Length: 227
Image (cartoon, rainbow, N blue to C red):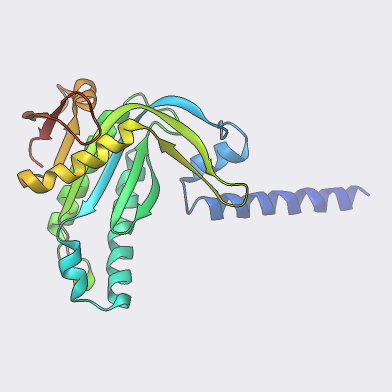
C-alpha cells in the first residue's frame, strides 16, 4: 500500500512537472508555477501594467521576397531573441500577432519597476536587432510602443477556448504609439504615464501631444533617447 501510494505521488509530481515545462513554453516557468499553485487570479483583476508592442518595419515588403518556409524560419529566429530579452527584464510575451509581439510587465506577477524594465527591454531589442541578421530576412528594424496604466487581466474567451490576457484602453494606446513610429522615423515611443515612472532613469525628448485614435484628450508622447 505504501509503495503504491509513493508511486502515485511520484507520478503526480512528474505530471505536474510536465505541465509546468509545457506551460513554461507559453509563459515563464515562474508564472507557470504560480498558476499551478493558484497564486494568480485567473478570473480577472484590475491592476497597473506596462504594455510593450513591437512591429517589424517594412515587413510586408521583405516577406513578399521570401518563401513561406523562409518567413517562418526568420520569424522564429527573431521571436526567440525578443522573447529572451523580454523575459530577462521580467516581462511576459502575451501573444504573437503576425510579425508583432504583445508583451506585458507587472502582469501577472508583481514588478514595482515595470515601466523601467519595459524600456530596458525595448532598448536591448533595438540594439540587438540592429547588430545581427535573421536568416533570409537580414536586419529587421523593430518599432516599439510602450504605455503604462490600469488594465483588466484575466481569462478571456469561451468555455471551449480561453487565453490569459490584458485588455483596456491603455493596451490600445501602446498599439497607437507603436504605429506613430512610422510617421516620425523613430524606434521607441512611450506614453506620458510610462515617462512619469521612468524619467530620471533614461534620456527622453518630448515628441508632442497627440490626439491618438479613440482618445478624447491628447496624449503626451516621448522618444527614448539613444533608440
